[in-house]
Length: 132
Image (spheres, rainbow, N blue to C red):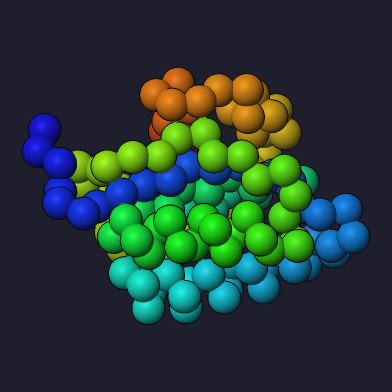
């Protein structure tokens, strides 16, 4: 599989800060759609009521800048990058940000224990269960 030059991905998990109301998630997703479109970044944000899991893909510089912004966002705590690296092709070409909630409350805590290829495989399994 040929790697697309400059295409990069990051997969991370984080927890909604305790002082944040659940309604802030819609604000985060709405703003992210705008910013991602401007930066040519696509991806998927999953929220299970407490935890976020997000895959971002796009130009390496833009993706790394976004993950830094997310790390510094007080609405998230315990931001942990599970996987990052070059990407062969976008998974979410149609979405500046696809957003879904997740019914399986254990899926993201399980994914949080993984990294690298194992985390990516778990993300793909969860993604396969979502209706986007």
